Length: 184
Length: 377
Image (cartoon, rainbow over all chains, first blue to last red; front, side, top):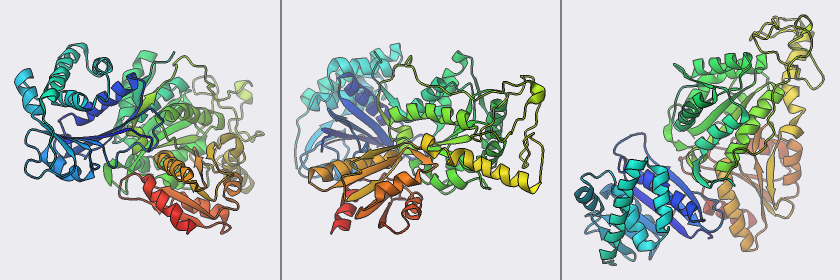
């Protein structure tokens, strides 16, 4: 398999996991890698489970989906129940808050972080939780450089909101340093 | 230098349409095609082009046909259910020989089906959705970059052959975002319909010219003539005279089918050096290519024939590609709509295996690898 990173971001409609995936994939392109971004969502505009997928590779990416991610983010309990089993052995599992607590799957590196709570407390709303999550992801796995992510955030948000999101991204990077990963 | 951007297939289609010179869009939004309307609504006014949201799909198809008759390069974007509603007017555009482009971003059907999920279920609808023996051109790209260039080609072919062209994205490609690196000032061949050079009183709008495509005057340019969905003579008026009807119907088909070599485009990978040939198009062709690469690394001789033009089919080319193979596998996200064409063309000379998925998920490379191993057992 040529593809290096197979990432799945999952949560509930409205949490911004697709937008998060777009920002991450565009950041990877800015870094000079190849990237694809795709998604599966239901007909609802809020609620329902949403999954967004990103492949990042130095080579051309053919199959654009992610069957078995090596990095999985779950932002909702439903998403965890649905997708945790797809993660490859030894893969990186990032869980928001209490998601999946008590039923952690074995053999993967679990990084638990109160992503939504951090966002709410520091930013006064949960709107940027997706971008905090991107900070956590890159803090752990270093997929995309800081400068490329800042550029991508500016491409994907209007000026005023972009700066707020750079702040949210930094919150995620900082939070990642404090996570103690565990395996069950 | 073109800036590298992350672009979605639907957006690339919208950009390609503008590059091709699209000056009129009429549509009724439907998932998974809606982003095309959104981008056109944003981009068209700045270029002096017209965007109109119609009350439904039938009106949308009527509006683009009218706009094209008045000289515009016109198109619409829809998905399966909307495309079904447009079928009568696809036939009208075919019989009146008015160039228009119908973008159909395929989703799971039949009917409302699964609105947000993918399918390649409109392969035969594109060909036979409207009644009668007309021909049609349909194109299915497999990447965001190719979507841009093939959208331009769709407009070019519509203009060149005075025909509706169906641009068959599937949801996977329509919604896929990936690397897009195009110089917007790049010189690309843009074809505009041939116009009459004779005086208005000498104009024969549906003349049986050599090549089968008569020049087309725009309404409002002083050429007074008649469009009708009735079978018509060279002047454009209703005729039921047997020789006229026969000649007319044959010309509608021949002007496309006899130019298949000019229209048909495909990608061939290891076709001459393989035991098993995969035939795949659109998003599924990416899975097929990945399967091929993995199998070849393991020493299994597999090739890929990827039709970019879905209709018309260059049958000689497919026959030649399939000749002598142990098997041909056709993976697709429907129950064998293209495979049946391959079966018809090879006519039993090579075993044709269908690999069909209709659960809304993209065919994965592993499924193809498994079937290749199975047929080589």
